Length: 197
Image (cartoon, rainbow, N blue to C red; front, side):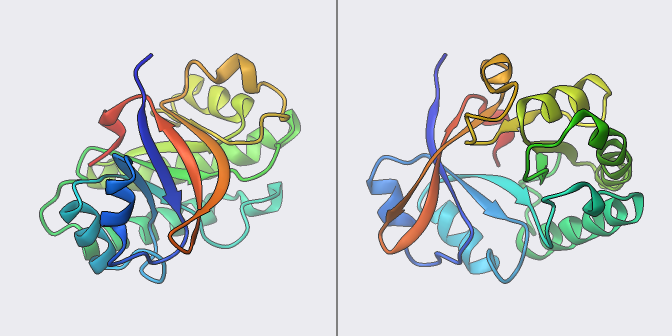
């Protein structure tokens, strides 16, 4: 399977994306938050000819209490607000936005996660974007099978249950955490450039 060398970054790296491009990266995951990825970051990434994939994470999606219908609506609205602020050319229209399930969820947690994603997906569909999921293999598989996520980005936590069963189905596979050019990043393999804009 052909993969594109990529990374995701939780900091504003405006002015430094050309360094990553020169190091051989072709895509970057940016957080759908103006404090982490302002318009200048998006513009600089595209100037460096990096494709962008979109992560939505705020608060603490690290346990089942986070995942409610109301939170899904709220997060969907926040993600859309960011897209409208940084993408005046509508390059991201029709592309996935990966909402995070950032822990090893149990099967008993799935109903709450499904409720969240049903609301999040509603907001995405309303504006012409695709709800997708970052998380463990079982979470990605469950949401995709239920029609609540378009695609899955597999967490770097290889010890989580179901990792090996989903790794070949993920459109993005997260790798190790490292430091480059003064920034903390996660390495990623992007298997489908359709996830990028």
